[in-house]
Image (cartoon, rainbow, N blue to C red; front, side, top):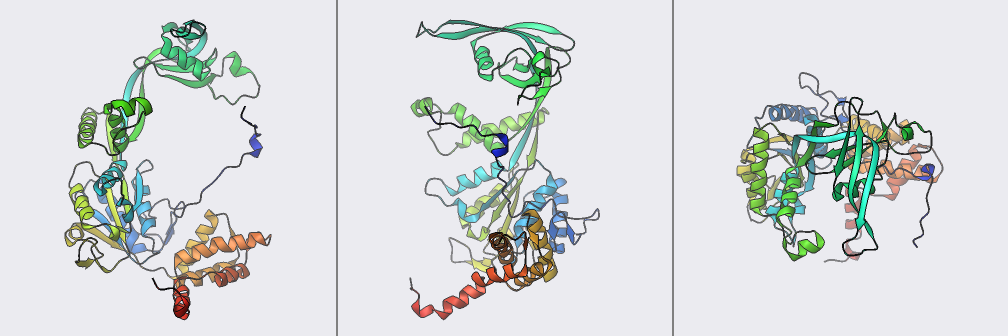
Length: 458
C-alpha cells in the first residue's frame, strides 16, 4: 500500500510565479491616445506606446488586414512589454502566444507546421450553444445493478432512477448505464444539484442545494453550496465556451484518426495535422459564425528574435497574413542591417524587403535614468521587495549605464543578499555587493580581453 499522508490546509503553500511582464495592464494611454508617463505598468517609451495605440485602434476597426507589426530597438527597451500591452488592450480573453524565432527549427516537425500551429493557437472561437438539459436538486436516486456480462460475481450499474426538483417543478427520469456510472463516479446523492445533457448524457455536479438537509448541516464539507434551481426541470440553457482553432484541429484529428495505435493508446499516428482537417475546421467555424453560434477573437502572435527566422518562414508569414483567419502578428528584433537567414543577402533588421514594406514599424529607445528608476520601483512592488531609496538610486544608475535587464537581475539578487543577512529591506550595501560579484556585458567583455591568452580558442 502506498504511503499517503494528508496535510492540513494551513500546511499547503501557494506557488506564485512572478513573470517579467505580469505588471503590465495596458498601453497607458488617455482618451486622446496620448501616453501617460507612468500608467498601467508602462513607463516611458511614449512615442512607441502612442504608435501602438493607433495600431490597436486600427485592429479593433478591422483595418490591419494583410499587415504585421515590427518592433525594432536595442535589447531591453520594452519591445516585449509593448506586445503584451497590445494584447491587454484588445481584451482579457484575447489569446497571446509568445515564441522565439529559433523555436521553428525541429528535427521532428516542419517549420511551417510549427508556425501554422502557433497561428491557430492565437485565434479564439467563442461558441454559444443552446442545449436541452435536465437540471434540479436530486431528491431520490435509485441505481439498479445487474451481473457483469463477463464476471457473474461482479455487479455493474444497469440503470438509474432519479427525481429532480426545482422551485417550480418536480420530475422523475430514468437513464441508462452511462449516466448511472457518472452518478456513482461523481458521488451524487440526495441534496446535490445536477445537470444532465439531454442529448449526450453528460452529468455535471453543480454542488449541494442550500435548502437540502445536507446543505443545512454545519459539518466540515468542501462541497460547493448553491441555491436551488428555478424554472422547469427540462429547460434550454445557453453554454458559452472558448476554444482555439488549434483545439478544434486536435479534436477533429483525434476523431478522424483510427488504426491500431489510436485504439490502444488514444493518440494520433501522425505528429502533424492534415490540411484537410484544418480546412474542415475552418468551414465549420465559418458556418457557426454565419449562423450566430460563434464569434471569432483574433489574438496576438508575438515572435521575439524574429531575425532568427529564415527566408522560408518569412515567405510563409507573408502568405499567412493574406488569409481570412489570421491573428495579429508582431515581430520583434534588435538587429540593424543583418543577413537574412538562409541567404547571403543583407537587409534592414534581417527581414526581407517585401515583408518590411507591408509592415507597420514601431521603434523603441533606450530608457533614461528616471524611467529605469520607476520600472525598478514597479518591479520591486511586483516581487514584494522592500527597497531603500539609496538602493533604488544606485540600481537606476547601474541600469542607465549598463542595461535595464541587468538592473532588474541585480534587484532580485540584492533581495536574496538582504534575506541571507536577515534584513527586511534592501539597502545600498546589498546592491553594491551583488554588483561587485556579478558582471554586466561590458565588464564580461573586458574580463575576456584581459585573459584572452589564457582562454581556450575554439
